[in-house]
Image 1 (cartoon, rainbow, N blue to C red):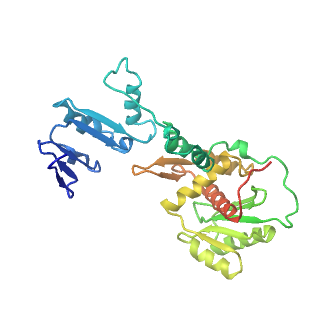
Image 2: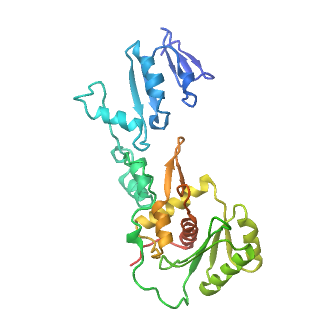
Image 3: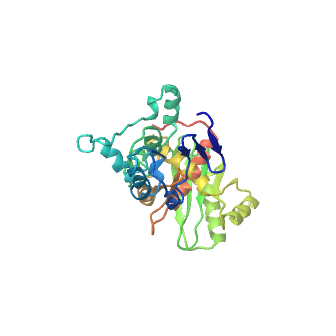
Length: 324
């Protein structure tokens, strides 16, 4: 493009004939309004506000009868999914065309690399991010819960075994949950759940279960009142490990447990509260990418978090394998 003028501050290239190529953000959709367009490219369109296309961009294409290219990773069955369906029905929507390109169609990505990723990725992430699949919006995180329950009896003795514990703190409304996992067998062996007792009694209850199982690591949430409890337990000689829960640290913690349950890397206890909390646990896709995980309003996720923390300790203790 000879004699083009580049305006970096406005992210725009002006052509000598009067046209231009510009990059705009949709964070403030109404700022996009303006002159007619010959071509609009909406990148990661599914994450934009639903009104960006019909109320702002589409009218700007009308004068010049311009074209549009909408590109995106799926984000549930939202407005982008509806437009994608139009392109699949060319008989009734001839002005639309849809294209689907899962990652394995890219010739530059080795098949063994994808297989390695698939083995280490939870199904809901694999389906969306790599298979370009439009999952529904049910937000289910844990799949194959019942199949992951360990049915065979657990040995009575714990001599010579490696145990890891996970602790999620609670006081009044929420529950404190302690989970013990046999790191060699990759299966849960104990779960204690209680609330409405003071911190000193809670630490005593943790000490009692640890006297029984002798875990080599105890992973506990350090947020808020967790930190002083961890400090007190360290002073008593317990092998505490701190975990600070943030939106960034929570995602890999939950996704690792989801993968373990799907692939039966972990044997779950047949515990009604645990199974119910796993079944109701949800995720929400964030506009900027990634997921927000948690229990639905009014429900608890204490057993989920304690199990996820214990499982993290198991993963850090050695290689992962399934159970019989």
